[in-house]
Image (cartoon, rainbow, N blue to C red; front, side, top):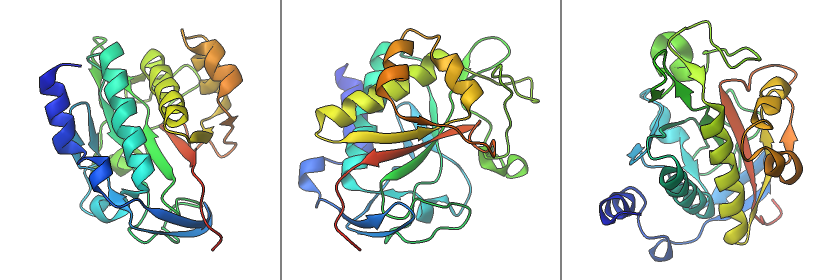
Length: 226
């Protein structure tokens, strides 16, 4: 990693050791958290959805922030032009958050699928009021959207999930599950990390087809009883 990239990452993600470690309680669908940290609104190769209320809905466990920091940096080393949009994660104290069944203890994140434009350039999914800040963008089984300006970049998505899994493992944690519609999972299995993803990542299907524009990731981080 270049010194410039490392410096920017240090600003985007303050030193983990200097921050108090978070403590989560309960389950992903009935829990809370103490000492949560906020996902920075922007970093070297990512940004958070742009709606005005996002700031209070993008808190995570301190370990999750560290994993995201390292995984995004690792992905940038492999695919330098990769860019990512981060969705909602949770409230500062955890607990119920509207429009989500889980996200209650700081260990769940929504990460939008990376995309390419019509010219093949890697771009962010459009995040505007008229498309639910990305949550209303729909993709078919082939990764194409009704909006011809974006298609899913499966190689980048596979790299990100691989790096999230490996980074979590190296930090003594894990990825409990990744939710993505089945048809798109199959596309990932055809990438260079396909074998790893098929056998080492616990994918869940989404019959409601809500997880086609983003992956929902639950990290395996020990939490105390509620």
